[in-house]
Image (cartoon, rainbow over all chains, first blue to last red; front, side, top):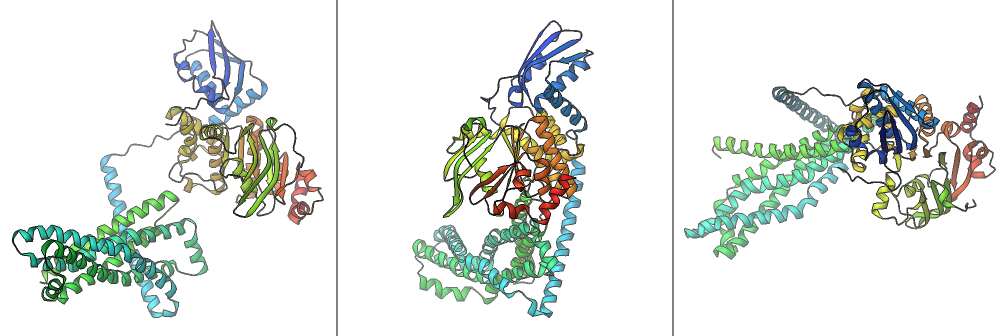
Length: 377
Length: 262
């Protein structure tokens, strides 16, 4: 609730009754009326017909007029006849205007309360619809990809390289920092256990396998989803509001070609590269911890890496990255196109975009584990 | 223009105002007075600083030098509390409406009431509904979201919000821009009607020549970094200042004048 600023510019509205005559005075304005609120309810109204003497009213505005009309209506409902006297002509005119407009005013609609089951059903159908719409979007993107592959001169190379720089090169510092710290954390936690069994050297297996195969691709994808996927949604969403997307269509540039395909390809190229970078940095983080905590020197560590890490496990890790990239880019762009209305919608869709893409990335990762486990890799 | 003696007598009194961004000076020694109960329009070519002047008056922009008095109170260097009190006394209609997109029209109109009064939610809804009707919107508009409204209805909803606190002073930034001629004419009538019944003082920026003829008491022409003409419309069009002549002498200006004469 806001501050009830008692304004220095007005005096409170007053209402004094004796016998069948009530005198109104002061300012019947938004400022003056606040003080009156309770007194109207509690005033002991004389029985019988009433005269409201309004000559003492200094100023009246629409809010005051509304309150006065409500007061009269309330008294009349109680079976009294009410006579309002003493209003100046301009005040009377204002009262009439408010009376007339109030008659045509709407009232806060009583939205019918919706039961739990109905809400559940509505949401389920809504989500089902959005799954179908998302599949449609993937299909459109694929069609656009084919179209552009057949006519490569129409492809937006500048947009592609710009997006690679934004999503890839500019993400290097944050990916480096987080991957390094991830390596440090895993080496520290795992190292404590290994040390207890004197199995220090196995830190190499722990770090290189978990990082290369699982954690580096996943953490990189999550960083990129938060960093780039959200930016895609916000950019396209804002363009949607300012009708820039419609302008593109009118000029004859399919928004898919300019806004989605370059982003999709840029991320599919950039994310595997970022993942390799994260692989290296996270293993380095593990190496630093291995040397300080477990006395495994850098050269011992690096000698052992080729013995324990197969090419398959490295490629499996990096190979997941393009899939994650496609998920992030498609979800980001799809949510951007679903912005409707105004600023709040951009915020909402951006949140949805990040949550959905991280969820889908982790779900896809789980699926990879199950399927690859099934074929014995 | 000569500065009249007593700035207290005016709702708005701007004296020797100087504004600018960086090294660009937009206004220099600008004077402007607005009397209680009149409708004043600010006109001038693009870049003449109409919006800058308006934003300075409503305390959204800090001028470089000069004095702006609103209801006799100096607003340059005003304290936060005093500014809050002062904001309660005027309403502003932004060019694009600037309605909060996540709120319904009724909630939008209720925002200033919630911030500035201690009224109950029920009273606020009732007052908001009245303002929506005063602005000439149909009864079902209150439950709609801004994105569901047409351009003309959006302006009316924004006007309802500007009127929420029963301000004595109303600022309008291009109120009829983007409206069809029928809606624009109706909006002009509405402003005049509100001025007459509520005793409002209105300051508006407009390029709409019909509005200038139909709705204004005086028109201030901005050019050369100050007000170069400030008279009723009829006299302003007779001015021999080259900028003013160029502004009103086109075929559109004459057509609007002829419509007025009919």
